[in-house]
Image (cartoon, rainbow, N blue to C red):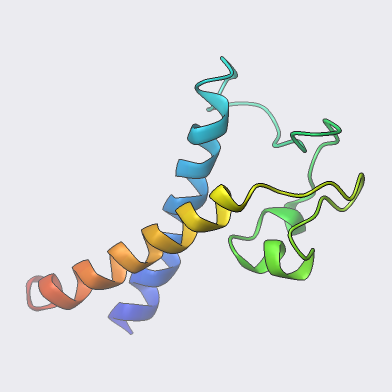
Length: 95
């Protein structure tokens, strides 16, 4: 159960890191404001924001304009998830 919880928290954190990856260099507010497509600026629905799952369901494309969603977002989410799982493996006795 610890690994499942670690994976989910890792995916959520990875999604937030992806948000930071885009918004900070573009001087956008990363606390408030809706997530939008980087190509068409269409606000994304909550179903479009599920880490990894939404990217797979949408085939890596925006639901509205069909432009590609950068692979960097999925890479950040998956790597963060893996790091959280590895941390749980090594630190599991401390939880």
